Image (cartoon, rainbow, N blue to C red; front, side, top):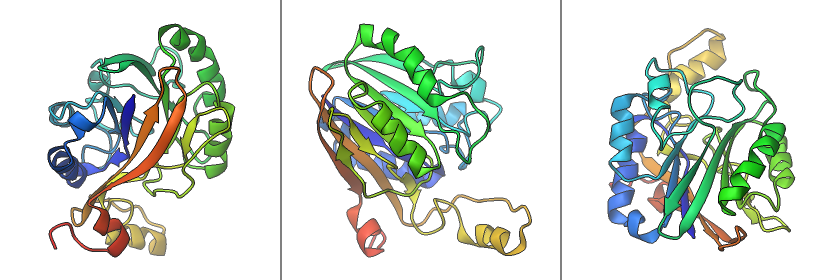
Length: 267
């Protein structure tokens, strides 16, 4: 099974470059299953029903979330959609599901969403949360992809190794910065500390630079605005066999020159 995992979609710029990538790269025909993190999709914080409809029109199979899941008042309503999952380690009785079992042309695939705890809001243990979910998921499919939405690289690597041989892939999200440690662990779990973001590369992690720099200089609250220049899709392509073992994992950038040469895709 060929799976595309798209890094955090940040605002309008992220949504626009994602649409462009679907068209020019013919993503839907290349991949059996497409996952995208959408927790920053609406104005950089959370998701709305309007943005949800816009993303689902692209025929994305599963949208994952993170620490901004409930930033918008429509957040709870969005989580009722069967293609949207939120972190599974929220406390009991929180609306929505922490994982989903989906059908694809290559078979069933499970997607699990979990939040890290280091430098993040208080949340239940992601390690133990996965342990509880795993037996039920394994009854349905051997192909399991985990979006681990976390800040600390040490926690992410530890989590990936903890799931080695159980998850098909553990892909980190949240920092919006793509890391260079792509690998397959000994027991055939594909791993990447952070896939990056799908949004503007012109500012600071998808937002306009001035307000963020001023916050660092003054220690005063500032409103962050989404940047729109030089957008880029940052994603990862994973090939998984029928037994749930990763065969390959590769970076996907669109357009490539924004990341490597600092040019606009319109140049």
